Length: 470
Image (cartoon, rainbow, N blue to C red; front, side):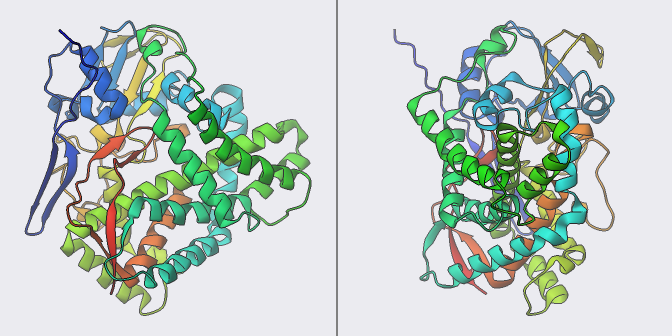
């Protein structure tokens, strides 16, 4: 009898009707409760595949069968406890996330904790603060209009990958904002390709940690992984050195970091630290926004009523002129589409935290080093909190309606909420408006969409689309 390490992915649920669209999601897991091997093999490919129907409801549960206490929190008041009230105890990112990203980001803000995080968080928050948006919005407008011109030159019915197109768009925007005008499109593409390759090579879970090793084990540095890391670090190192040696003073985010270090040497932002923070800002700003825009095109292509409302709003607010930063506060429906997309497809669908010391959550005794997970994917689709939770309904976010506190956390919540939240939201709305003003995006015939969660949530095989001028 042969034992197979292959498991079949779950079926995809996707339904359409007049004025109704339930976008793609995996069918809930129905295997035996202790079928740990199958769950592990599924999770390596896509963690969303191991959730059962009951996991979406309001509850706090634990699993102790693999050597490590695993706790899943899906109730807003307990989400608040973990990510805000007791943030000091649940500050540390999961070893799976830290091990997955440490070679690439070092001690960058995304995975750092303790004194390093406390020292750098205010610095990075100030650099990407919403008050600096006018300084960076020009990059968003320019790059989006460059893509408009390129799309206008595409032959009719040309099939392109929306994920790659949005990746290139957001890479160029964040490259100019982080590194200034000295980075070439080729360099930006090199960093994006490196990130994409890196993400495909890391596991969703660190089995050694789940089995009981305190910090898991480092990733095996295979030749492919080394090449992916080298592609990213090579570009970022070179640009960082240019700034450190004073060859660039362009008002970019990296330039602002260098100036802060020069004025305050006690910050200790040496070359490695600057590179790590630059890589972190790039990853967070490029990957998450690209994925969100990709999901928006998928949703609008299947929801013609929503697409028509987007087009009508852009025409009313912007007329025939290209949308600008000044238009963003008036694009209410566009914002609602973005927020609903982030609800259905949060860029980081799992937020794992490692308990520093014993605690108690909803009557469950939490052991030191337990893995406590809050999943925006589950929380945002909880039928106890949302009406028709799996349906695309942008109107949820119109007319001043707001979700129950701590039930909507696409950028995390509490002290570790994404520092670039306003930058990312503005960039997404602006790019959506500029592109939707000129084009409709349609899925290529025969396209099957499967959400897959690795480090971030993407369509598993990209999103083949055709571009149609309006």
